[in-house]
Length: 98
Image (cartoon, rainbow, N blue to C red):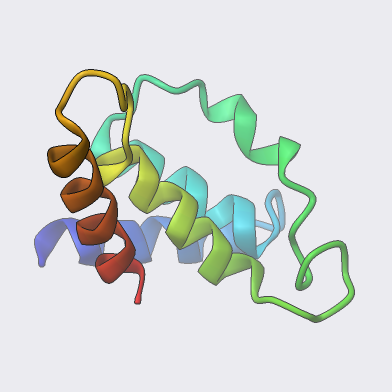
């Protein structure tokens, strides 16, 4: 719970500083809290702020959370495990998103 609170606080600060949109704020905050090896510069590559390109269709912050969840629980090498283990990991990750 402490890491969640830290990520929420960071995301709020990033957004309020007006330097990142909602998606970038959430992704950058979670990225920092989990200590991902992925370069943080990838977040601007996702033009999803404002609900996917300012269309208001999907919440950019929610999409960032799902992407950041992939940083922590995503499948990095599907060929490493058996097909059954791969599918279990995949469904476990999907259930976290739901």
